[in-house]
Length: 141
Image (cartoon, rainbow, N blue to C red; front, side, top):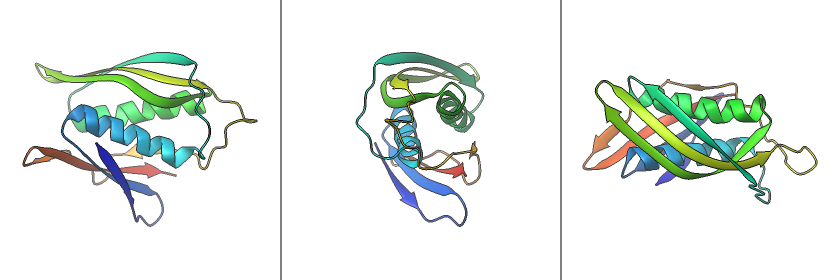
């Protein structure tokens, strides 16, 4: 599981690699977190469960990251870690179940770097090359 930020003209872009879809999704979540939060002491004191379904893994990845972004911007809850994540294809649907840990956003403790408006599909295609999955994700700022 890994990610690295790459140059992008107006937004934030990251390349993700992993041995499984779960690793790709975890890498994406940590790239998202690093993009939006200054380094702070993690005070995870609660957990949430996320269940999503989609027709394609790329759509599922965007939906997952948009859910993390929604929790931050609308519910004022910061995701710190992905404790469990399972991604499976059943019939024509891709299904995600995840347990995430985090805490309420407190401006006196947490500092936001930027606000991500949306996660985009631009240049996203999850590829399997010799057993290693990879894709690119772009955060619209």
